[in-house]
Length: 159
Image (cartoon, rainbow, N blue to C red; front, side):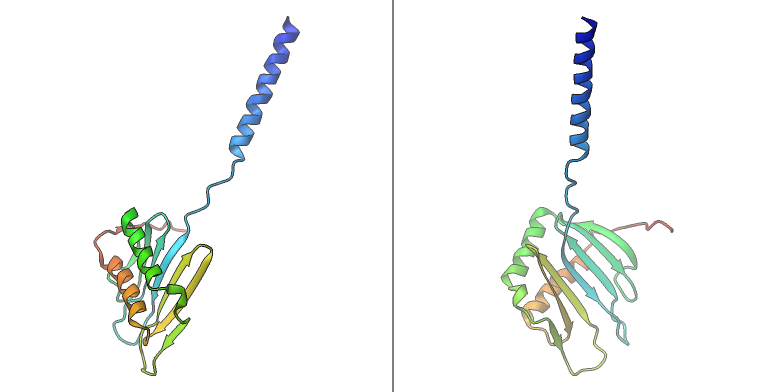
C-alpha cells in the first residue's frame, strides 16, 4: 500500500514538473512591432529635430530634440480605430510604390525620413523636399500626432 502511494505521488510530482516546464517554455509572445516612424533632422534654422515611432499595438514613442514641440522622451497611445485609420491612409497612398528618396536643389532644408513596416516588408523614404503631395500628407498625419496633447513624459533611468 505504501509502495502504491509513493508511486502515485512520484507520478503526480513528475506530471506537475512536466506541466510547469511546458508552461515555462511556451513561446514568448513577439514584442510589439514598429509600424511607422517619422524622423526630422536639423537645418541651419529653427527646424524641429525629433522622432515619432508608432507601434502595432497603438503605442507611441516620441523623442524630441532641438526646436521640437517638446524635448525629451514621451509615450502616448492610439486607439485601435486611430491606428487602423492611419494604416489605411498609408495603404491607400500605396506607400511601397514611392521612390526611396526625394531631393531638391535648394539648400538647408531639413530632411525627413518616413518608414512603414507591414507584413514583413519595410520601406524608408528620405524626403529632402520635392516629395509628392500624397507622401507629404502622410508626413502631416504623423506630425499631427506629434503636436497632439496625448503625451506623457517618460523618465529614462540613469546608467
